[in-house]
Length: 336
Image (tube, rainbow, N blue to C red; front, side):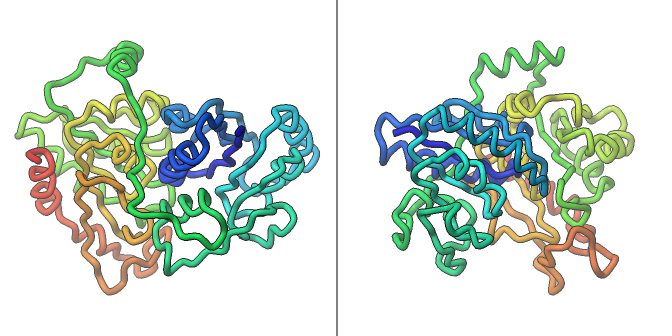
């Protein structure tokens, strides 16, 4: 069997799809499984043993580009895929497999995708509250619940990968590394304050930890603020690494402290000790899938609100999550 995954546009969602890929291989020995994915999530797919080739999905969010989708569909048609698993729920995500004439097109009904998808799953949110469960559902026949437990996502980073990345970035590996991931692509209501991160950096430095800051170029400014508030203690790597390099560096860490973000899911999939900080979002849908993760949330009456910015203007859900509380959780994770 030869199958194509139409991957999500979010790094965290892509990580949470990995158990689906493992289940597909278990059900179809000898399966060749490729992925059509945006280039910014391709590096995590390349770190999954189940994925063969990653094919570039060039279309931006909301971009229709029917002619270009038709051409991509024609290119994929020549590959002879037997099935396509369409993970996003949008109508546009189902167009290319349809135009490619892939015989089995599997996904949730989503945006009234009748015809574009011909093996339909209907989502029961109560039965499948977690994103990882919803993806695993697609390995089953419609109406058949996925067997549980569902394995945690896993991605790989070898010692050779890590050594190569250290050389490429001219980094020396400290004896003890704590990673901070201070960004959150969704918005500021998911970001623990920079001053809190800096206070935590000072406490962890006293324990002999080197602090490395990870994120995209968009996170560089907030990471620089943290570094300036904790002078000489933090290495700002936001925007200085590729995503693949960030995977390798995170794999070396003794602890990761992060907001609810794609890097949180990467750290969990690398099985690193993890402290995750929840404000406007909820671990009830996309938690870090790891036995080594501590989830911190104040569970205020106003949260989770799922807003990009605090609608009440105070962001108490994160401002009142003190550095002392996080430090206590961090020490337990490092010692575990």
